[in-house]
Length: 353
Image 1 (cartoon, rainbow, N blue to C red):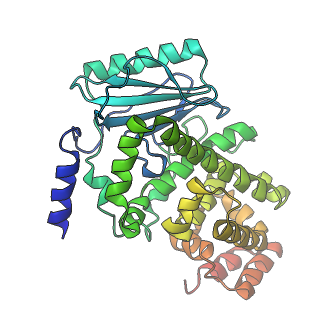
Image 2: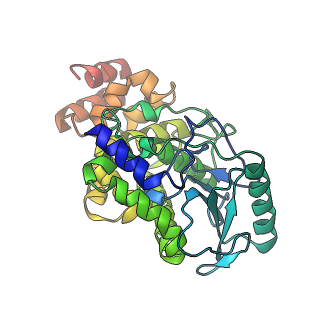
């Protein structure tokens, strides 16, 4: 079955995909943060990389290995899409087409960034993952929390490990970066389960050539839904009170990632397609926030001792996020903490899970 799939992939893409190995390149744009930081594909956004400014208002999308299409679209020109958004088609050193989309980027910066990107890929084409990595699922991805390893690759270095009060904008940036790391791993499994993995990727690649405005609407809304979800998560956390406002960013990031991992790829897809207020996602997040509220003193206390995953263990975070700890035990854990015996609280939390 797998051999047939690879054969079909080869037939479908051989005319225009220059496949690389595991990505080793990184590419930086001054004044922008990369959603993933390397050229891993982001299937839900139909892009290989997305960059955003500190206030999230300006964005740059990169999509490589575009087909030629029946008509040759203008290259090197800023083609208007919608609002203040523009697309430009370029070619890398191998002659393969790619697209850069600018959303709410001022004219001078568009030219500067376009020249920077073009110069880079005229010297060497982008080294990206093989298309098979988009399509062949990671069987353990949905159950694994290894993608939640929180380090400098997920949280910007100037923020990682900081316990000082952060501005809301800095915290939003950091949590948005964590969202990337938590979701990128297990969507491959979803693509396989959906049955639309090959056609979805093919449609996405051709869409930027045959229907750039329609394709861009989808890409743009996906990013905005993801941003909306992070803001919704922050708002929900604020409602938990002063203890959580003082909680280190690292702890908030670990809670966010444990939640995303616990809901599975199917519901997590809603983050990019329907927004934070959509049905099952909203219900799951509300339930998770309610469970956090029941452990407000416990989580706040242990978050000050170090990473929650290191102090309490990855297993605890996973079981807690999935609602696997009874209300009675949650109450016991919190009571021990409130009474000033946190070690008993910790034992109650970890016993038998």
